[in-house]
Amino acid sequence: MKILAIESSCDETAAAVVEDGRNVLSNIVASQVEEHKLYGGVVPEIASRRHAEAIVGVVDEAIKSADCTIDDIDAVAVTYAPGLIGALLVGVNFAKGFALATGKPLIPVHHLRSHIASNYISNTELKPPFLCLVVSGGHSHIVEVRDYTDMKVIGRTRDDAAGEAFDKAARAMGIPYPGGVELDKIAESGDENAFPMPRPRVDGSPYDFSFSGLKTAVINLIHNKQQKGEEVNVPDVCASYRRAVVNCLADNFLLAAEDLGYTKLVIAGGVSANSLLRRELSKRCEGKYQLFMPEKYLCGDNGAMVGAQAYYEYLAGHIAKTDLNAVATLPISENLF
Image (cartoon, rainbow, N blue to C red; front, top):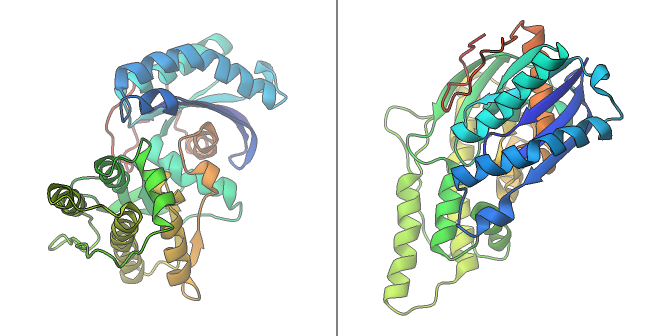
């Protein structure tokens, strides 16, 4: 089954053709990073306009790169939640029009489920059940993946997401957008023990995260040094801060795995590309857990991951009508169809 998949939840206009959930025939991404760099972050109105400008060309290229025609496509899938509402609407409306014009089934896909499904592409042997750490700019969840479309959140951030915490700390250090990616690179040359950083915990909720206090701690550290006229050793601050964030993520994730008896562990989302997180979990899982990670090019938003999850949504009978609407926030466990 060949699925044309469309992703437009934030600032990447993406389309892919995926066969049977695991075989990627094409994967096209039009990034807006350079434009949003001018503003230090994603501007929703600009993102929506750029999606509208790019989506026809991106979809056309995805179909052609897959060596397909429209007649070869069996269904169209689209990210409909969660995300920037204006950005989502561009993809949803295009997909609805495509489905209506061609008579193809329309498959609605949850953005976080897609990130998890990126692992089905990189690790073709992976099947549920497993425990997944989903970490991105807007989300930090520990998710029980009981089946391909049956998921339960057992831990989540109470405030900032890990990716957001990286981006805000990077901005305070004058690191250009996208800050989290650059912070990770700079941290490789720093001393992670140079500055003590807190390891926030949530009382009574051992699997939940809290990054706002940690973010405030690093911002205060930078401001105090600047006010005293002292030089800020950026690589050391980056390394120390990265170590603290990664420890919080890894500690809670592995505690949940131990408590719930999972031995198959998965990471997903933009922050799953973080160098230290991948090394730390690989080291701590060795000999005890099976660890699955997406290839780095699949960690960010892309159409292939949407196509991977769409296949399983289709098998579960999750087909939308042409009244499908975009939803800005929606729990990963909720099925609207």
